[in-house]
Image (cartoon, rainbow, N blue to C red):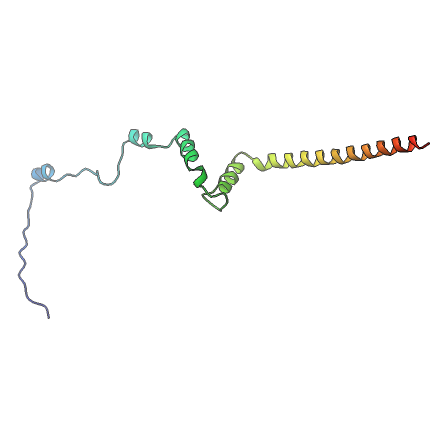
Length: 119
């Protein structure tokens, strides 16, 4: 059961002149910063790589985000790494074919040497 209690309210009213002198109307609590302060708080590329070096072994190797794999994938897309990778793969295939041809020629050469020595 609720009890009846008397509550005294006190209302303080300011005149226009008193209000501006008494109440702080600046927006200091909303995180408003000057352009200069904002620029100084920006992370530089040098800051990024310093932090990256410090966190290198804490970063997971694989993962959809926040991993070395993610960094490689997104950076690779940015610098057209896939286009370079296709060229690298084509050159590797060509090297592999040349090695196979070289091996075949060496085998032919060895066979010719063996056949000429038996004659």
